[in-house]
Structure formats: structure tokens, C-alpha cells
Length: 261
Image (cartoon, rainbow, N blue to C red; front, side, top):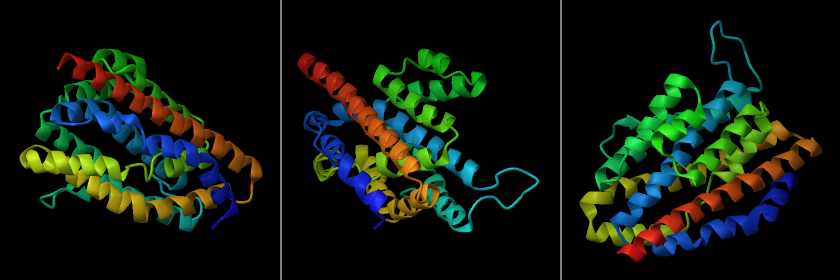
């Protein structure tokens, strides 16, 4: 294992444990709670795809005329990840991105997808994130999460994007959450089967094969540059802090609704 990678993994482990053991999982008891969770989480699913495509744009040639761009191994790594994330298969064998699969899961459980739909519609029309947030009524913690992701993309530093993608976005679904989803699925199999499938695909594809590809990609981009690795570690720490804040927002909203119940 690359010594730089080992160092980052050791230094971010306390934050990872905060995410894996977050109290939000303890308040997701039924489909109504899950709907609140998806309202926030869908933004992370969407901007994950944006981070991924930004890396592909940086590390490969995505324009015409085509020219060889970057290192061949790194091109292979990012293209393989993109293929799996942007054109995976759903439960019926249809090719879909993980974001589209997530929207299907939301629709099946009765979660409102109009907010994220409005956000994307306005962003596509205006290119203005704040207008899109306001038009959609995006929760503040989700706004903060997306802002950080696009600040990282806007840095133009592919090694930072790769680090936050690799250490800040992968392998963060705890067994506790899967157990909760299994319990809800037993009671409401026709309402969250797609969500359960999405999580299983995420663990199978993102948490295993893709995580190894992403580690190698980050190692290739940072190389032996100590400054790059230090900057990558700082960005990763902030990305994990943003994830904790996002989960805090979900917890607070579910907790409030449970009081009303």
C-alpha cells in the first residue's frame, strides 16, 4: 500500500467512524423517515456524478478533435469507473446511471422528486447554483455539501478531485444502515426494493472494485509530490466534515417529524 494513502486513511479514520456510527441511522425506522433521508442524500448522489465527470474531462479527451491526453493507465481507471456509474443496470437489466436509479428508488417509496428535478431544471437553464437552490427549496445542509463539491471541481486540480472522490465518497455505507433497510424491506418489499438494490449495487461496485481503481487513480495523480498529498488530505477532511453536516441535517429533520408523530 502506498505510504501516502496509508497516512490519509489513518488520519481520516475518526471522521469515517463518525459517519459510519452517525445517530441519523438510529432514527430511520419507517418509509416516512427514509423519504426525508433521500431528500438530502439525492444531492450527494447527483454531485458525485458531477465530480466523476469532471475527473473524466480532466484526465481524458472528451472534445473533438481528439488528442491523446494524460497517462494511459489513469485514463483507463477513470473510464472504467464512469462506465459503471453512468451506465449500470437496474433491477430489470436496463442501463441507467446510479443517479437515475436513485430517482427510481425515490419514486417507488413515494419520496418527492420534484425538488431535485426543479434544482436540475433551473441549473441547466441558468448555470446559477444559488438560483437553482432557491427555486427548489434545497435544504441548507445539502446546499453546503454541493457547494464544497463544486468548489473542489472549480479548483481545476485533478488530484484534489480524485482524493475527495476516493476517500470522501466511497465505502461509507455502514452495516447498521443496511440492517435497517433490510427490516423496512421485509415489511414493505414493494416500496423499497429499488432502494435496497441501489445500496447493494453501491456496495458491490463502488465499495469494492471502484474503490481500488480510485485509490490507484489518486496515487497516479499525486505521485511523490508531498504538497499534493497534504492538500489532498486537507480536502478529504473537509469533504468528510461536509458529509457529517449533511447527516446532521437529515437527523434534525427526522427527529422533528418524529416528535410531531
